[in-house]
Length: 148
Image (cartoon, rainbow, N blue to C red):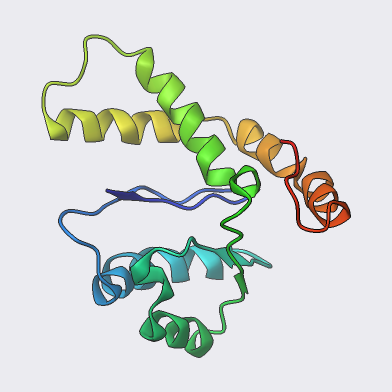
């Protein structure tokens, strides 16, 4: 499993998660060492995460309150508003260009890291630009499908 975050001007390093991620590991392996420093380096930020069980636990909600991290609610019905899925598509496209296929999990990890870092920030920014239009479409459709 991999944890990542993207922003308009920057992105986080990949975090390799081995085994099962629970809320305590999410705090100790992702939130404290990666998310807090990343967010502190931004002038303004709203953090979004999906509703995976470790993300939704009370201890996680308290963590964000205690660290004054503003959260954007996850809109599970609107995957087209999830930028990270589009980012992963870009990474997957880069990975398919590497031959031969990875032979070990560590080799695959190195390739994923390299592909993640190789996505130009301008491409990431292009993911953010249509979001206001997409949100407006969802609102005008009374919460219905946005068509993207």
